[in-house]
Image (tube, rainbow, N blue to C red; front, side):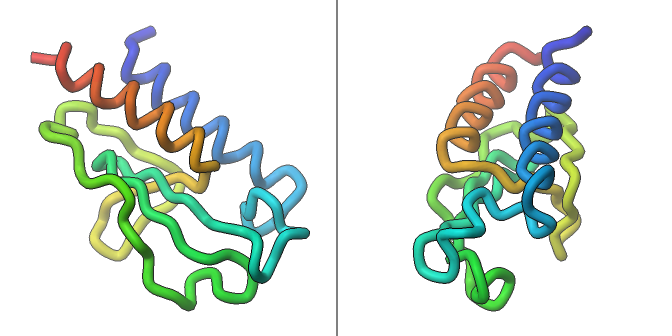
Amino acid sequence: MSEVIYLSESIIDAHNRHYLFSPTGLVNPKDSPNGNQIYHLYSTGEISFQKGGWGYLQRSECISDGKIFNYQKLGLKLPKQAADGSTYAILTKEECKKFRTHMIELTKNII
């Protein structure tokens, strides 16, 4: 299995696990409305966050990490689709950082 497919499946699996106990995908729904942050990892490598709970999808997203150079090489298709056509997964901050680091390494190795 290629590393890109493995990465994609790992991201999707982590995303889906958040829905096992929460229909909205919120990582800690009991912390809502003030204690929960929603983190998105985009297929572009961007990481964004917004307040969870009642504010979910009703507030602007803040970008914490920008697009990865040559992210197109990966061709990742994640479970959710954004208005601009990119895809994303709902993850924890730590998961986003870990997967983004892996994305960066893969883009360096793909010609």
